[in-house]
Each structure stands twice: as structure tokens, then as C-alpha cells.
Amino acid sequence: MADVSDSAIKDAYEAVRSDKDETDWLLLDYAADKSDRLVLTETGKGGLDELKTKFQPGNASFAYVRVKYSNDVESFREKFVLITWIGPEVRVMRKAKLSVHAADVKRVLSAYSIDVPASSVEDLAEAPIVKRLRQAGGASYDRA
Image 1 (cartoon, rainbow, N blue to C red):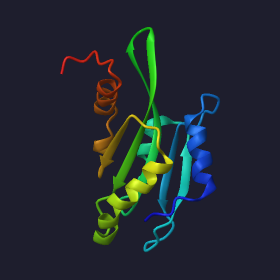
Image 2 (image 1 turned 45 degrees about the vertical axis):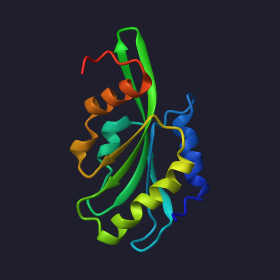
Image 3 (image 1 turned 45 degrees about the horizontal axis):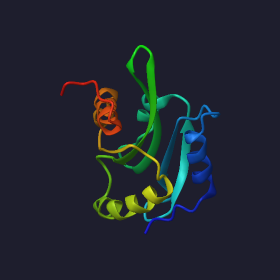
């Protein structure tokens, strides 16, 4: 079981969800190599592009990001995405615990449209994520 009780996590989550706050992402990492305690590593205002630069190859991390996209010139939507990052250098035992820990994280970061597993920055390309958000939201103008 992951410890996600740090009040900073809840505060950052509420900031990302708030329309009155410019914060649009948060990043959670483990407090130490053998720890099951997650801590707030960082927050930001630069969207998915900025967040992608924060993931480390040796870390298993969770991120929560607001993604703004348009269906047409007059229609904008904002949806939330939960990202589970497993860097290519993450140890086997950490990977093994991640699916159990993900359930604990999802209880705290509970309002999201899709979850995205990622092990490389390419997995976080905006176009496929927006396509999935459109499909999940029921307002997909994509033919595929």
C-alpha cells in the first residue's frame, strides 16, 4: 500500500483542478528507493509539454495534468489525465509494486478522464492523448 497522505499532495491536486489557479500539473515521486511513501515533487503551469521534461529514467512517478484542447474554433475543453510513469531504469521490485500503488494514488487523484501509462517521453505525445480524451468525452470529431 502506498502512503499518499501528505497534505501537499491534496493541496496540489486541488490547485490543478481549480479554474482560479494557473497550476496545471503535479508530479509525485517516491520519498526514497525503498519507501512506499509518495511525496509531491513539483507542480507547474506549462502543461503537458513542461511536465514531460520532469520525468526521470530511474523513477517511477505519478502525474496529474490538465489538458486543454479544442474540437473546433469555438469549442474548448479541459480534461484531466493521470499518468503512471515507469522509467526505463526502474528496478524490478518497484515495478512490481506499482500496480498496487496506482490504486492508492487513484483514490486521492480521483477525478480524471483517462490514465496514461508511460515509459518514454514518446508515450506522452499530445495528439494521441487528446484523441483519447475526445473519445472518452463523447465529443470525438475524429473519424478513426
